[in-house]
Length: 189
Image (cartoon, rainbow, N blue to C red; front, side, top):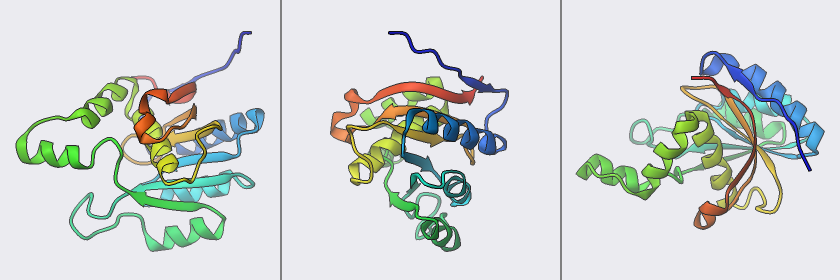
């Protein structure tokens, strides 16, 4: 059986692609009957747009832990969290699965551990691909998406969204069973 699909390549990365990514991802989610959307969002701006775009779907927004940018701060605004939740979205704030303690080792001892090697390897396909895979695993680890159903995972580079994938998420301990089934869009660089 052959499956044909289209990949949209953006000439540049970054937030200027967000609206197109959401449109492309929504169309493919409808075609495949995918009801779970996982979206990376730092400040919540992309999250709010995603919950508006994916009415009727379950939108899981994954944001990084407090203190990521600077100690005792959370970049995801309370206002955006309220907006997302009022539209039925779920916000997960947690440590990056591909860094956490590995990043602490790099910062303190200038050494790279397994998780960061995975990050750098996935980045050969683009930062957004790495982010989309990572947030899907984080959502699975939190029990917010199932590991036996495909999701649309959306990530980005330097804010906003510029990548969308169809993938089968896994829990982090099953990382090597992660399956990226389709690349819907990504930067061409």
